[in-house]
Image (tube, rainbow, N blue to C red; front, side, top):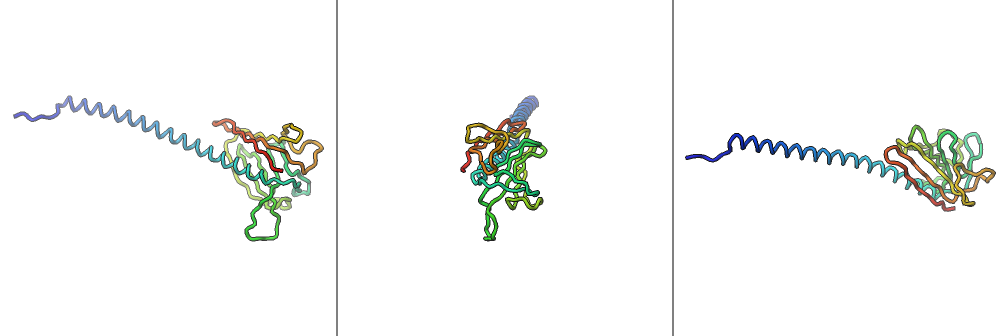
Length: 196
């Protein structure tokens, strides 16, 4: 009586087919894992850009036409935009939270600036910067290649510095156009209309 079973050749062929199928499925799985990692990084980057734009939009909706003074008592415009060393813009906003009900101003001064390809935000605890160390700093976006800010005036022109020449310090633009360039992703553009 003969027993049925696999011959050595049949066994080798089935192992070879299994090896081919496993290598194909491994390369497919590896591709899926690499794609997932790449998409997760992109998603995290877009989340940071979205957070930054939303935060900036909210803060600019509370802008007030109040000039301030710096540490050396020099007057600063209510909205200031400069490209002297790096792109920098600052403004005064209302709405500083006061949960304990202390007698203090509800105004804040905010500075957005570039430092080593990083967009940073500095929040001054008082609108008039009497104490040079009295601020909180936050890194918003890293690996930024360029930031461009333009201010739209009542005369229908875009300005890369603000306030315009011979304009009062309490003048505010009608809108802000913010373009942030990132090496891998390209340009992100946000147009924010200001409530004045």
